[in-house]
Amino acid sequence: MSKLFFFNGKILTMEDDYKEVESVVIEDNKIIFCGSYKEGKKLINKDTKCIDLKGRTLLPGFNDSHMHLISYGLSKYKVDLSNADSISDMQRALKEFVNNEKVKVFKEWVLGQGWNQENFIEGRLPNKDDIDKVIDDRPVFLSRACYHICVVNSMALKLAGITKETKDPEGGKIDRDPITGEPTGILRENAVYLVYNLIPFTEDIGEIKEIIQSAINDANKVGITSIQTDDFSHLKSYEKILDAYQELKNEEKLNARINLQMLLDTKEKLIDFLELNKKTRDGDEFVRFGPLKLLADGSLGSRTAALEEPYSDDIKAKGVLIYTTKEIEEILTLAYVNGLQLAVHTIGDRAMRQVLEVYSKLNKMHYRQDARFRLIHCQIASKDIIRKFKKLNVIADIQPIFIKTDMKIAEKRIGKERLKYSYAWKTMYDEGVFLAGGSDAPVESFNPLYGIYCAVTRKDLNGNPEDGWCPDEKLDLYTALKLFTTNPAYCTFEENIKGSIKVGKLADLVVLSEDITKIPLDKIKDVKVDMTVLNGKVIFSRN
Image 1 (cartoon, rainbow, N blue to C red):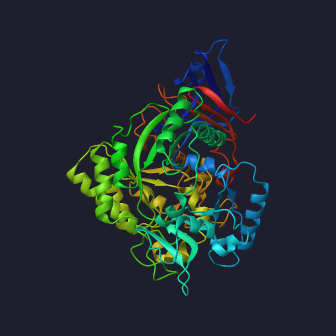
Image 2: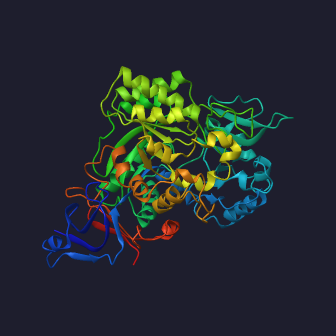
Image 3: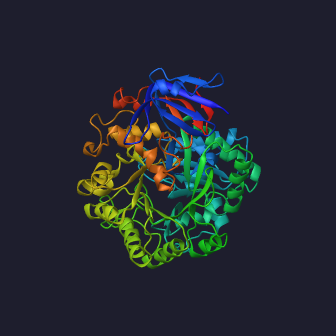
């Protein structure tokens, strides 16, 4: 039986009643000791691997409470437009990508992601004509950084049958030329799927497994051992996704614990899924069914986040509610009474209020002692909405790393007054709201140390602004660490088996390159992961 002995470092257990210990011993896949160096040493033998931390930090393995793992894996085969500072720069990147393209994962389609018109010197959205100038003989689909808007070329519009006569789908919008009425190539929210659903994503299990393994390999390098992932919409068949995860687990090649956030966005899709007779918590320590996932609104950057009052920089816009209250209540109720936890994407206050009202009704009509309702993102809130979170014991799945981008546009979009209760994690924490941390990768980096840094400094990765953005909302370091360790485990009803360093819990650990408690907070973003341990095995070592 294999043993690892960790000693001589800053060992943070994330257990509130004993925050630090001198040593930890793991045997096979469990933690069997945490306490003094003297007592820990008694448990080692000649076969024990002794790891001298030399003052470095040992933590529970990181857990991302919301990302899109397969989408991240697929992003490696797309053109990266995140650094484009103009439409011409975007065109240049497209041209280079097509010229150097070796693997046609999407067959003849060209996919890209990460553009943000707020960074463009032209000060406008790209359109089909911009894309046609570079590629007009293949369909092109380019997601904005938020993934709630895309721009496509004329060929993609033609394949989708989108013309000036095409009506906007419910919960979506086709942008049109104000003079001619012709589609511009910009599609918002549910209109995105008019083209997206045509993309020939792979259905080969072997390829899907490779995509998953490649993505997890990157996650392991930043200390992630558990991933709560919304994957169901990123390939044609969620059954193939389930098969891929199960095969990797059975082959002992799954180097992360997966909790599936199941995006089933219509009543019909949910009914089909319920025929599998799967409930939240079904599965095992490596692959487990999580909550039903829905999207109630869009994003701030695209002005599709649903607000109660108009956008400050577009008084005609209040965003998009994807569902009527009746529609979303029907889907959430059906899922809830059939044993599924609920997790809903809500960025704007109008979307949060809509879903919180449904949660309140479910609490009264179908009371469950430990429902653990969740809202994901929770960005543009208000005082009464935050208090409703606490009253209903709703978990707020936040993404601290979002501020590095959103601080540049938030005040412009919503004004100073609404900013007081936006991205207001300290206020939420002080009000007793349970917070968990994620990244929404590939929207942002899934490096938890970046998320922790943003939570405690309120700065972007360049260290700006000097005093932090809305600095009163900074979290302390210990609370920020809990966002990515103990708290996500609670989200998935797994706090008794992981999330902290405690005897009997799973041996998932991360070694950092520094004593994170002694360095300036500004330096947290520069800390490296030296080692990642999953199930008692070292799955990543920097040295």
